[in-house]
Length: 472
Image (cartoon, rainbow, N blue to C red):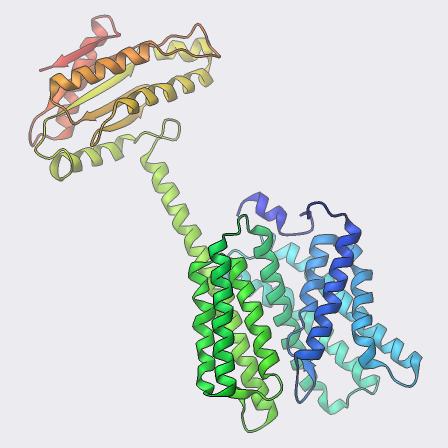
């Protein structure tokens, strides 16, 4: 990950054209809206608990994005969302226990935000980060918070103590899944640089197909529910993470809304068993999707890194010409079974004259600029099947798909072009080169031909430099 992405992942990132207060207001309204949506459409039986508490993920994102100023907004939004369900005849009783619940809802994501900043400074980029997020960031704060919430409900007389274990497990599942889905989407959203229309269309199509599979499973054949899996998982390989997680959020929400009450294809002997089947399916889908996407991204990053270092090993960073070993391999291949097989070819060694004096007088920056310009002069003359390389320092080598006479004409044009180079920042700087050229015999080892060209180069230097010397 780059430092830019790291900075975007947490509280230091800034939304454009919005000051803090409107962002807090938007976050609070989104928290309340998702809480109401969850309690209205996503509450499952027999415990009547929202199966996915997305609001905890919103609170986490608010702390990461906006800092401690989010606390009062989260508290108010949580209180407003929970009070209607906890209101009793004794108003003080209801206010006290709702306030306790709101305080717990406020503190848990604040703790998680601190752990995210500590353990996931670059967000989600590897599969190991998913494990870290669930185990080291979510598990303990959420476990403590749901225990306290359940105790608060028991002490307030809202539920019986015999439901303690059931409520703790239900709330633990609900909060972890909600925080996971929202944070994964948020992390992908802030890292996304482009929004391809094609991928947006694929995401919409995936949601439609998944909804069709769910409705078919609900109204006709229950086995169609498993068609939801490929509808979501195929997105891992064709879309960016933000589109993958958008589809996952929509599909999981639809699963809870459609099957949270009657369980459809997930129905078992008892309601608790049916609920467990639905939860297991949702967890499996979510972990496969997020984990698979992270593995895919990690593999792509490692492949890109491998290609980068392979390129660095084969090509000179300054001139972008091949390096010595890469040239020798490419030349041998071209002569024996590539584009130069059976054709006349010649090899030339180009060496800049008195290049050390350029560095001594004008500096190494000027020397680098000279080398870049020389490389341009070389590549400008290359044709199909020709090869060019920087062998080190100020020495370059060319393999030309031309007989010796044509090759001499090519390198003479290169010599003239180099001698005519001018440099705006160094008006007094002039460069010349000496070139040795020879033909490559059929079946000859490239190293042998290169030695003869080196000999010609040595003669060109002895005879006064700035000339082409030929080895017949």
